[in-house]
Image (tube, rainbow, N blue to C red):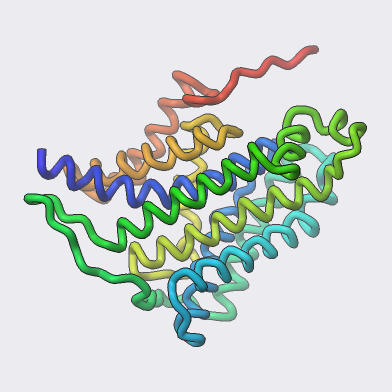
Length: 292
């Protein structure tokens, strides 16, 4: 039981990071029905921005988190304007291939400028531990979970209670009708990319703290796992992305704790296959029907 509880604690801290990244996937899909496979590499850029400002400017955790989020928000807007907006009315396969191309471009541009080697993340948070019997909780894990929860609640507030949030929901429901009602659809889509990318940037900083290492290819696998989390929760659903991220994090740590850590990635994707077979719309997703 102690081992189970310990792995549960580890899974919640890891899953909260996946949830932040999954929120970006689910928001973009909810607005323009696009699976943005470059999203995992935006998360990688966020980790490097956090690394740069803390290493060379010597600033603390909160300012580094904010700068990383703002930088990634700007990057998300640029990606949307340059790569996706011109293809908005094109076939979905064209946009999907473009997303993969943007992903590879970010990886190798970053590799060109910073090199391919793994870098150790600077110490930003207290690494002391709390012990509850045989269960150990790192203070860093507490920071990660509470930061993720705060950002998720802030996102939920923006979507439900602000003017731009209402515009996002309107565009998601019916883009043409929203435009007829005077909503600036292009600006709303760009704002959605900005928010999703900002959350990915925050996830990058948190994962740098969690694993204490970063590299230019670090966004590939966590990005795919966050996509699995978004599908599991119901892609297009913000609460679903949160639930999916936590579920994937817990599954991964349980497989590592009770089995073999080499199989944790396989377990996550096997889980995705099962979900797609049993409930393709996800836990909180809605089944949609197309009229012919």
